[in-house]
Each structure stands twice: as structure tokens, then as C-alpha cells.
Length: 405
RNA sequence: GGAGAGGUAGCGAAGUGGUUAAACGCGGCAGACUGUAAAUCUGUUCUCAACGAGUUCGGUGGUUCGAAUCCACCCCUCUCCA
Image (cartoon, rainbow, N blue to C red; front, side, top):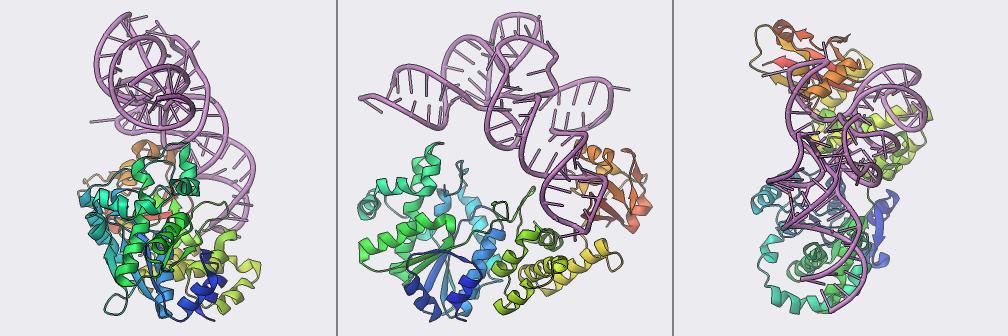
């Protein structure tokens, strides 16, 4: 099976500008494609992960990826899929985030001579001169058309600033620039980027008369139609310091029944034939599927060893027995001789965001320490116990260990 | 620049001088049931040294014994006009 057919079978392809051409191009390794990443945070998250996987798949098929860091577009903020304006980031933050992205990406994509390259659109966007830009590319955009784009339509009611309105033009300019400078002939992106991407192909055609292509990746939505990779605490990050491998593993382990196969197909590198076999498993094996998904993804992001640790920890906690030393741990220091109150402990371990919340958790019987339910809000954990390490459980499935360093 | 309508908790949305830490819905968290799932039911949902106290209704001042609620100025959004 060729790469295009594989992507299709995995359900990754959402929209394409020209199916025939794109199939030819990527199946024969002729694509020099780019994907843009806006440095809105200091770590990549699950949404980016899909794009990275796609890059990797295409790279394995002989195509050349261009990673575009939106250091310049970050100054503007993409209004697509948002109902509010992004807060403007300072140049320092943008730079910091870009650096973090690069580090993380190097784990997935091979960079180097004749392989993948990484560019930052700050390098050309920041130098643009307003009047020149208007004359050069402004003439190629129809405001009528732009306003018809779905992403702007949604914003018409709530207000869209001129700053954000220009995001499409900047993104289109990127494609145009990369096409001229690196011969980039294709752009990939999330499905919410579709209109921005079309802007680029249009610009290239008008300015240079060249054909360029665009393809969008299906957004990873759960069965409720919401974007996946978000939890109450925010995004599921790829940075182990922000989302531990164990938490990452658990996120996928706890996925809805209805979403398991879709995620295995879209996110893992398991050969499609095997996936078809897994799909035929008896319904009772649903939990095996979830484990498989969780393990595969943790392995991709954090490596084999961390994935095994996360799985062991999960087995230890939920199935009993096994080694539980890999669960998320908080190392305490400066513990007074009389020990630590349970409320303080919960807050320092970040199991509760505030003391009031911690109090509530205990009152509702949601906290156990070393498998003993805590009834009193003034319960004290002794220093000796903490030195040995205690296992705190919040609710049914949040486990945490606290130990004195 | 002008006229009108708005800005209330994570979100949506009531409230238009004291009984309001603010109805209701969603979301979140916890309990029950289960399969570490969903659905359902129950509780809970600003903070803290917690039967008490502190700080909240775009911002800053003012009126008042008392303000989310009245007044002034400012900021932001929407609709219409220029």
C-alpha cells in the first residue's frame, strides 16, 4: 500500500485540493511539504503530535518535510477555530516557545542535509514593509472571498480585529515564500486551516502561475465532537515535565470506548492490516485495545522504557501487585517533625488546586492514603510515613506518591 | 465622529438598592453503579488560619447606613448611521 492510500485508510485525510496530483507527488516522494506550528506554548501537545506523525510518515515515504515555526505569525494569532482574540505574546516568549518546539521535534523528525529542514517565518515576515506588501500580495486577495471563509464568518458576530484578519495573508505569504525559496509544493495542516491554506495556493498561482497543493488532516475529535487532547487541566502535552508519561498513558487508557479504534488508526504506526485484525477483536477485549493504544502512543512520545514504566505503574495500581514505583511522585522537603496535614499534602502534590477544594475532596470521601480512606480534614501524615513514602489516591483513578527527599 | 444595545463565576445566562458568594443550564470534581468506558442517579463547584472571615459582577472614582444594581468618567464588543 502506498503512502497516500495508507493515509486515506487511516482516516487522516480531510480535504485535498487535487487528489490525483497529490497522490502522485507523495507516493513518488516528490513532495516538499510544509506544516506550520504556531509557538503558542512552551511545549507541543497532542494536536501537534498528529501533524508530526504525518510528517514522519511522509518522510519515511521519501518526501521532504519543512517545519515552519510561526515565530512571525505568532505576533498576530490565528483566529481560526477561536471565538476570542488570542492574547498577544511578547517576542521573548515567542522565541522561547520556538526553541522548545524545536527540541521536541528533533525526537520525531530527522533534520539535516537532504532531510527535513526547519525554518522560522519571523526571518522573513518581520522584515516586510507594509506598503510593499500591500502592493505585492494585497492585490491578490479578495476581501469578499476572505469574508466568506468559514473561520472568519464565525467571528463576524463576535468581532474580528484587522490584526487577526491578516493572519490568512501572512500564512499565504509563507507558502509563497517557501515555494520560491525552497521549491515547497505542498502544505499540510489541521482541517481548520483549510481556508488559510487555499489562500496560499491561490497566491502562488496568481503571482507565479505555479501549481501548489494543500491537504488537511482530519481533526482528532472524540465521539462528542470535541477536540481531543484536552483535559480539565488543559492540553495533554508532549513535554514530560508538563504531562508525565504516566498521565499521558492514563489519558489514552481512559479514552471513550467509541474512540479507541479511530485513535489506533490515526495515531499509531501499527500496520494497517494489523489494525484491521484488532478491529475484529471480541467486544470484551476493549480494555486490551485501550492498553495497546496507550502503550503505543506513550512509546512514540516518551520512548520504550518510559512506556513500560507507565504501563507497569498502571498495572500495579489498578490490577494490584507489580511495581508501583513509577507513579507520579512529589518529593517533599522541609517537612516539620510533627508531620504534614492532609490538606497541605494534597495541595503541595497539586492533587487539589486550593485548600478549599482539598477540604471538599476529603469531606466527600475522595481521598485515600495507603488504601485507608481519610475521614478527617485535620488528619496528619507522620514524618516517618512520609519518609517511607505514602500512596495517595484521589477519586478512583488518580494516584500519586509523596516521599521526603 | 454620531445613535442604540451590551460586558455577571471556566462557559452560557438570570438578577436592576439590603433576604445575593449571586437563580438556572452546561462543563469540572467527588460519591453510587460499572469495565480505569459511556449513560444514569446523588453531592459539590471564589479563597482562607472555615459553624467565622476576606475578596468578587469590564475599569476608576462618587452617592448611600448599605451597590452587581444609582451617578460620572474611561476601556472593550455588537448593530445602525457618517
